Length: 53
Image (cartoon, rainbow, N blue to C red; front, top):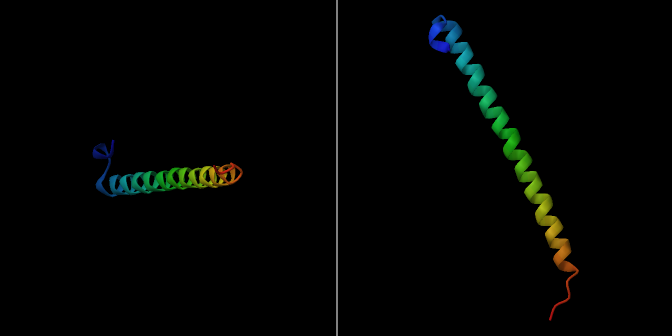
């Protein structure tokens, strides 16, 4: 799509696309990291209640 635009407009579109890509992946990875942390804490507390043999 960007090759059909003027060079200055194409550069703006590409920059905006790169920014959107990086931002969305940062949000996705941050959310995944948070969910893994919650899962790890939940497992930690669940295992703390298990009796040792």
